[in-house]
Image 1 (spheres, rainbow, N blue to C red):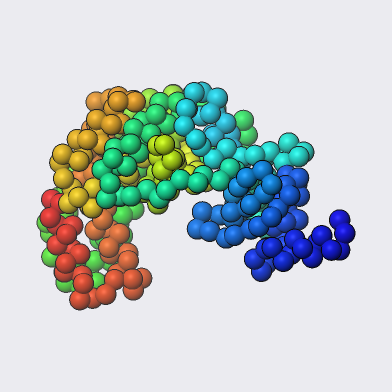
Image 2 (spheres, rainbow, N blue to C red; image 1 turned 135 degrees about the vertical axis):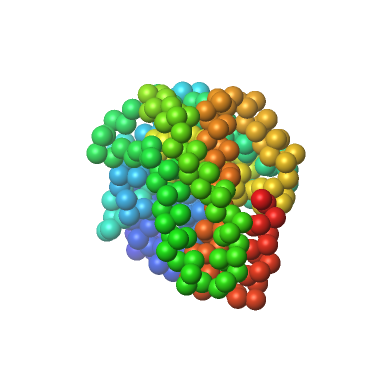
Length: 319
């Protein structure tokens, strides 16, 4: 490449982007512009836009690549951020401490949590993903990510956190906990019942996959919601995705029962929940997850003291 062409390329890029141009040569991409966004690096090329992302964890990228290919080949009809192979056929490029991978750029709109149509459409998309995200066997056992016990272990860890920290926080937390601890206790007890054990055993035999970050922040809307950021996907109990999604959107509607029914109906239109899944979903939604989150945020100094009563009352109103 001539010095003049190199200088012209440098002038089109943001400061610090030159290393990325060198990395992108692995895909033989003529780069016209690079812009850093919250989703990754938006790459303008002669053939349209691409997205370059990086990770410190090669095993996550390997597993994610296998999962996305499995879902695409098993009939998922909507867009997913499949990795574009390099000119050598590799899924990613190692550079320094990171691995870099390339996908198409999704030029959709941001997911609007205040738009019920977006909420129902996303629940339907999640059901469709779960319908095909099964029978998965990792090609590389060393890169396998299994989270079969995550639900019960995380809930038990949250209970432990509450019990060992609540007395060090303002009295409002202790007062609220008197109203919430029975729900937390029952939720954890439900995950000790045969329904969860049976669901976990079935999920393991079916090789079911979870996105694990299926939230409004990780959704784009084209013709339908597109799930991005698959870096945390793993083998696990799929109803956890649905519970996590509902925990993110339902508080915006004060846990409106009608909205919850609509979410379940939308999900069921693509994949019908079993009785065991409904039982476990009830346990996950019963647990005061928002209360734990508020405790941790306050402990880290991310909640102003005078706003604490209103935030706690909002959580109690769910009960």
